[in-house]
Image (cartoon, rainbow, N blue to C red):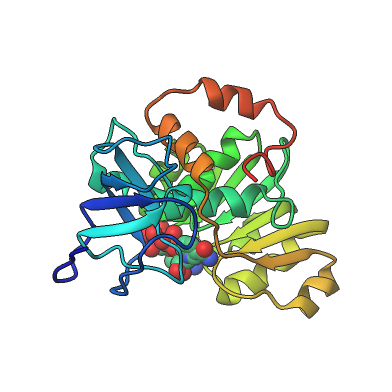
Length: 258
Ligand SMILES: NC(=O)c1ccc[n+]([C@@H]2O[C@H](COP(=O)([O-])OP(=O)(O)OC[C@H]3O[C@@H](n4cnc5c(N)ncnc54)[C@H](OP(=O)(O)O)[C@@H]3O)[C@@H](O)[C@H]2O)c1
C-alpha cells in the first residue's frame, strides 16, 4: 500500500471488510472520497471503480493519503451529480447535523417543534437547517447578516444576525437548540429552551448544573460514521427523493439508521 506526501483529499480508497480489517495511515484528515481500487472479500455492495465518499474514524484518520483502506461499513456511493471533491465535504457535516437533530439521546427534534440552530451558514449548520425543515420543524438560525438570504434559501423560517442582535432578545421559547458554536452561545441558549426540551452541542460539553436549573437535557455528541445514512444523503443530493419521502413519514426517524 503506497502513500506519498500528505495531499487532500485522497483519490483512491481500498474497501476492506468490516471494522478492524482496514489499514490505518496516520497522516491525519478524516474527510475522503475516491474510486474503489480493491475490495476485501465479502464487500458485496461495491465494485472496483465505484465512486465513494466517507469519513474515516477518529482513531484511524489518514484521508490525506492517496490510497487508503477503510471499512466498507463507513463508505457510501458518492452522489453522481456533484464532483467528488465536493462530495468529500458532505459526510461529516451531514452525518453530524442529522444525528444532533434527530437522535433520541440528543435534540430528538419532532415535526412542529421550534428549533434554534446556532451557525446556520456553516458546513454542519447548512445541513442542519435543511434536515430540520425537511422534518417539519420551525427553524430559526443564527448567522452573519451577509449569510441570511442563503440560510433562508436552505429553509430557515427566520434568521438572526448574531453580529448585530443578541439572539435571546429576539427568539422566544424553543423546543430544542442545536449548538454548533459553543462557549457563551451555549450558556445563553439554555433559558430559551422550554422545560423538558433539549440542547445538543457538537462543540463542547454543556454545563449540566445550568441545564438542570433550566430543566433541559443538554448533551455533547461526536458523530458516528453510518453507511446507510451516507447512501441516502447521496441519493438526496442526486434528487432521488423517493426514499426520503418514505422516511419523512416515519415516526422512528431518530433511530432509523441504527
Ligand atoms: N462533534 C462532532 O462530531 C463535530 C463534527 C463536525 C464539526 N464539529 C465542530 O463544529 C463546529 C462547526 O463546524 P463546521 O465545520 O460546521 O463550521 P464552519 O463550516 O467552519 O462554519 C463556521 C461558521 O460559524 C459561524 N459562526 C461563528 N460564530 C458564530 C456565532 N456566535 N453564532 C452563530 N454562528 C457563528 C460563522 O458563520 P457566519 O459566516 O454566518 O458568520 C461560520 O460560517 C466546529 O467547532 C467543529 O470543530 C464537531
